[in-house]
Structure formats: structure tokens, C-alpha cells
Image (cartoon, rainbow, N blue to C red; front, side):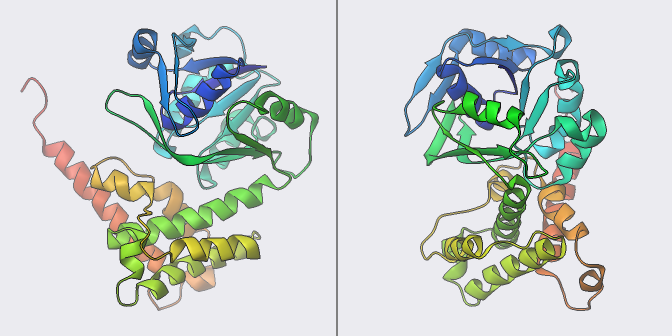
Length: 320
């Protein structure tokens, strides 16, 4: 199976790197600058599960793609999706599978519209990873799971082939029988986590140690849970039990990556993670008079985006 990994950042670099380390046929679709970095220093992964440096991994630029790939692993940020779809277009043939690892659901509609629903699998990953200043992939804990499946809940031959390709590839690969439900549950968790930690600008442990913090966090979760239920994807009891425990853990340093992006003055996925969930509210709930916590957090995120955009617009340009 020929695999094209779109980008070699924290997520694509980690899972694509592990696949390459295990002898799979992997090519990274990257920009010229990243291609030069990989040619020079290699793809470096530092992880509790084992460090590796992959010398001169195969890379390609979009303009140089001459034939389709069997599987496209898509791991970009939501705000880069339009550009990623343009770049990957030459790699999509009649039988190509696209496996997106973005959060939320909005990207599925966009990919379906561009490439056709039959090409697009459901997928998600659970990992904490980042790039350091030298652009090495830093895996921050022991968890590295990649789940995938058909969105109509069938166990198809093609997803079994993907499962076989990813088996024993240095991470936990899981063929899901209900990947859309899995994606919704991850979305509920991330939206609640991002909502409360970004609004409070604090990790979970500090929030729940503050007056009213425990109730505030659980109220965020309940609002997200209710939206999922109205959308036909009520989170399962085991998921809710585990999520409540995670979101109320005393002393926890856990934050959403969106908060870390805000603290670093970086772009955020406010619209994709929180805004799109709000758009899926039951109209009766959306029109109620009491204030929505999730909507309050979204306003906070959009105010951050507006302030950041204003600062960037007024900053002196290089050469001026």
C-alpha cells in the first residue's frame, strides 16, 4: 500500500514516521522548506515509546505528484484544510482512501464535497505531540492511538487492508465499527476541555480547585453532551464516566492544545471545534434566554482571534 502523509508536523510526522520505521511505503507531502529540513536532518522522533531518526524520508511536492496513492493520511489543522485539499488533489485516484485525523465533523463535509464521500473514511488519533524548535517530533506521553473505519459502520475489505498495513507499525491502530460515534465523543471531550480551559486560561487542576470550578467544568461537558445527543450521537456511559473523571481530576495540569496555542499567540481552531458544535445546537436551546457557557467561550476565542489579527496587521513588515 502506497501511503501519502500530508505534512510532517507533530501528528503526520509521528504516525507517518512510525509507519516508515516499520517498513511501510510512506511518502510525505511537504513544502520545499520542510523537504530541505528532512533531507538534511531526517525525520526525528523523540518518544517514551522509542526515539528514532529516519534519514532522508521520501518527500514530494504537490506539483510533482504523477500518480495516485492508495491511502492519504491527512493530519493538518482545520484552518489549513482548503490548502491541503488543493495540494493533495493530484494524489487522489478512483480507489484512493482519505483518512483525516482532524477533530470535529466539519472537515468531513468539506472533504466529501471536494473528493466524494466514497473516498473519505472516518478517523481520529489520540496523542500528545508537538514540534520543538529544531522541528523534531516530541511525543509527550505513552499514548499513541490511531482509529479509523467506514462511516456507515461496515467492516469493509479496504479498511481491513488498512488495518493490516498499520498492524505492528509502532503505534496502537484500531479498526472501529462505529468511527463516527468515536469522533463525536472525542469532539464532545475536546470542546468541553477547550471551552473551560480557554475561558479560564488555566489547567483543569487549577479550575476545579477554585470556587465553583468543578460545577463549571461539568456544565461545559453537559452542554456539549446535549448537543451530541440532539445530533443522534449521544455519548456512551463509559465515555462520560471517564471524561468526567478526567475533567475534574484534582491537581491535573491538563489543558486543551487550543489554550497552549493562545498562550503562544498562534492560530486556533475555534470555528472547527467550538463554533461548529454550537451551530449544531437544537434551535430551541439556541434561542433560550440563559447564557450558554460554550457560546461564552466561543466569544472569548473569537475576541482573541480579532485581537491577534489586529496586532498582525499593525506590525511592521520585514524590510520596512
